[in-house]
Length: 405
Ligand SMILES: Nc1ncnc2c1ncn2[C@@H]1O[C@H](CCC(=O)c2cccc(C(=O)O)c2)[C@@H](O)[C@H]1O
Ligand SMILES: [Zn+2]
Image (cartoon, rainbow, N blue to C red; front, side, top):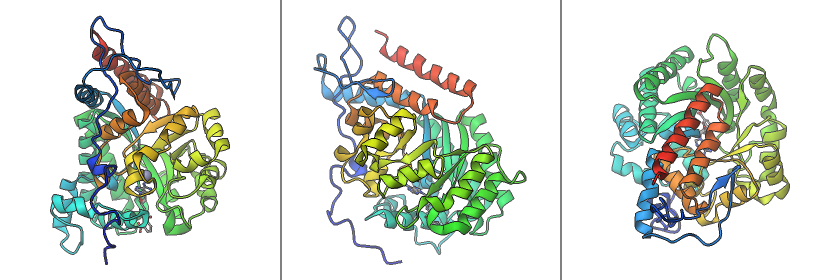
């Protein structure tokens, strides 16, 4: 495959995800005896744009404090892809098993390989990694290691988006595939304490045949894995109208699955409207272009339809030009339930903790604002009530201990 020329703007710009380490200027922990700085906080899921901040400490130490707070903050992740989460170590290990692949075996070379000129190029690279997953053992290893990486970031719960069609089409037996992900899920919960659930998504560009296969795998009682909770739609949006998949989402919802399609990532707000009206979306993957339609923003807020926001992903796939132009602030101002996610973290040179740091900078959040973001994700997750209460309590306990004088 001929690789397109490197991005037109040459070396990574400051907003390139690999150089995201902008100092967080929000003052973090209050000093004993001093009024806590009024950081922007998310109350009832809105950032309360603050007035003058309190006395500021050294920005560098504040940034380090907030990064440290984020690192220990219990989190839930709702929009993160199975293959897209394969670490450079896993990808290079799998590439070494399959020398016919053009995927680099050197983790360093992977950083360049994971530099995308546009969304179509991202999908090409993504599929070259999909091609490395060829056996149920590859699937089990990948899934377990993804959970390990999540646990290291205090991710207590994640809804991992899996595209089973892409694996069964490449010859992996469906039953063996389901057994592999379920084995890894149970082992990860036992070993790391991280609870995984599955979202099965249709790779839309692969058309109705892929949709038929995906909904079969998701609803056939002989195949459907215990951890499956939701049904999605991924891949390019351009040239892939959402309404064609209405029968598939109707079947999935009738089988008790929650609808969470990608929409408004690389196309306009009309795709988000279609996801809501035709596909019965309960949450929206990305929804970035919703900011262009005030009526849509109001609808999302009124009906508490959460957006699965993936800031660095939008920059890496060129869906948004720079982080400072990202519409996340508009979403919060409109009262929309915003969750923070990493999408395909190693491919985008990020991880969930970095995404929270990016959100802190863009929304000018302090610890309580970050804790509210984490609680948003728990609230709109498809975890059972007892599980939600447990993680909410962990977040509150952790935050209170961090802020105690
Ligand atoms: N940010 C993202 N936005 C959207 N999707 C994302 C994002 N990140 C990851 N994905 C994943 O990319 C895949 C795309 C797969 C795809 O398009 C395709 C097309 C034709 C054939 C085949 C095949 O398998 O033969 C696959 C999807 O599975 C989706 O889950
Ligand atoms: Zn995605």
